[in-house]
Length: 405
Image (cartoon, rainbow, N blue to C red; front, top):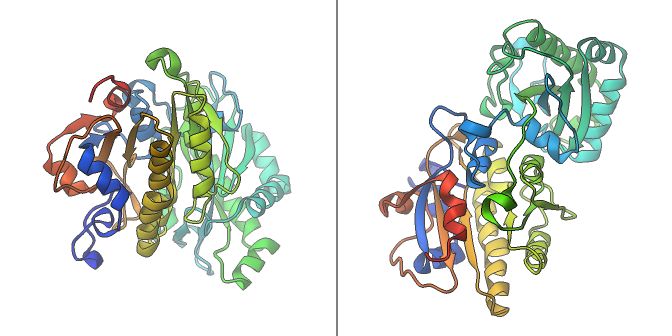
């Protein structure tokens, strides 16, 4: 949700502009703070940010994003293996050379899961692509929506690929040539796979139909977020709390699985603007009958920002307030349950760049037993900085679980 000021919003951020009465009410009776979730020098993303929020310092535990997502898919990595996130993407149509084409969408126009899986399966069964992935020891695991995982076994020294694979969502509208894998034989092989994939997918019947329907084609693949096997200490042992993770995004699910939290899958949860918000709330309330806490993750503000959709981002923020936070608080209040709730962005995503940013993010911590009377403040970036209550992201769980606020 967090962002920078937007000229189209009279210099306000989307959080300042959107109507968020429930979040503002929580601020008025809770604690408004400012969190640094991305350690200095690390890439901004939900991988590093979510590790921080759960109390695991990325500087110590981070080995790449893809292994976290692989865990959500039940993929076990061994020493010497390397996992990649594999996006279905949209490249510019036209007769220009491959390198001259622009990256139009990191999600192939928010392609839905069945089409995406059909395309990736057909690609893997095509002769040239199949021959190449067998040659370099890659197996591709279809995932959800545009998100797939590729695993390369027994790579050994991965130094040549680390830091050379670039997130596609950070370079939308740019020519892809300058962002292709670089470094050595593995990078060259991945680039060749991307070329072969584009040649095959560009004329696939599904993409012909997508173009006729006014949709972006899923005419490319993109390797990024590489990483090696990872082990994380038990959350239950660390905090003496049981918990669940409710998210449509494999990354969040994977982190939860690796730290020993239970995953709750909600039917109709898409990770997009139109998702099953009510189902997530129901799942959260139900899980709190058994577990000490639950995490509800909403991807919509981030996806809308990557897509450059200002109206969508504003709608997503308002729905987080009205369709998630408000009913959660209301149901907990109605049940006469004492509770504490932490609401925050994991990182900033900027409409100006359509990419992630490592700047501080606002959070509100509300305790139903307290009234901190933070008068005159709202849930937004500027007010969070103004109150001068700054927190390292890895301390947030300690704040959430402490006995007194």
